[in-house]
Amino acid sequence: MVTRRNILETLAGATIAGTVQAFLGPPAYAAPKKTTSTVASWMSRWMTSDKKLGGALRVSRFRDPIYFLISPISWTPNLRDAGRYKGVEVPTGFVTDFASIPPIFFSVLRPDGEYAYAAVIHDHLYWTQERPREEADEILKLAMQDLKVDSAKLTAIYAAVRTFGGSAWDQNAKLKSQGERRILINFPDDPTINWEDWKKRPGVFAP
Image (cartoon, rainbow, N blue to C red; front, side, top):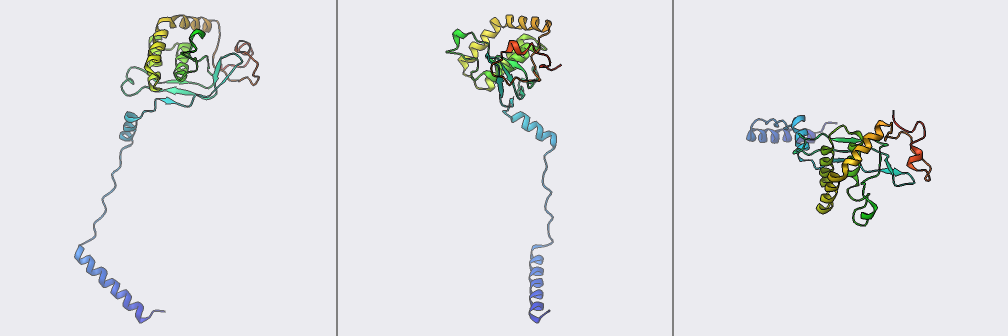
C-alpha cells in the first residue's frame, strides 16, 4: 500500500540525488582496468623466476645402493645460460647411483649429499650422451649452484668429473652398445633384489 510517507520519501530522495548530481556534473565512466599481455606476463615470470629445478627427488632403491626415480625431475637454465644450454628432463624409472664418489671419501662427500639432485641430472646426461660431455659437466655445476651447494664441495665435485669422468662416459657408451638400458617401467617390490639381477629380467625396461 502506497502511503503519503512513501511518496514524500521517494520525492525527497530524488531531489537530493538530483542536487548532488548537478553539483558533481555528469557521471564519469570508470577507466578500463589495464591488462598485461600474456607474452609480457610470461616473460616477466621467466626472467624473475628462481625455480630452476622441477619436481622433488623421489626415489626407491635396490638392495645395493642403486636407485631409480619414482617421479620425474628436471633442470632449466636461467636467463643468462638459456642461450647456451637446453633444459634437462629425467623420466620416471631412470636408474642412478647418485654421485659416483669413492667410499674412501664418504665421510666428506656422500653419494646422496645435497648435490644428489644435480648428480641425477648429470647421470642422465652421461647415459643418454645426446650432448657433449663438457656440457654435461657444466650443467652439473650450474645445477649445484641452483641447489646452493657449498662452494668447496661444488669445486671438488666439478674438478673430479672433469678429471675422471671420461672413464664413466666411455663405460656408459660401451654398456649401451651391449644393449643395457636404464629406464625402468617395472619396479621391484622385493627389498632383497639387486640391480644386477633385476636388469636381467624380461619386460622391466622401457622399449
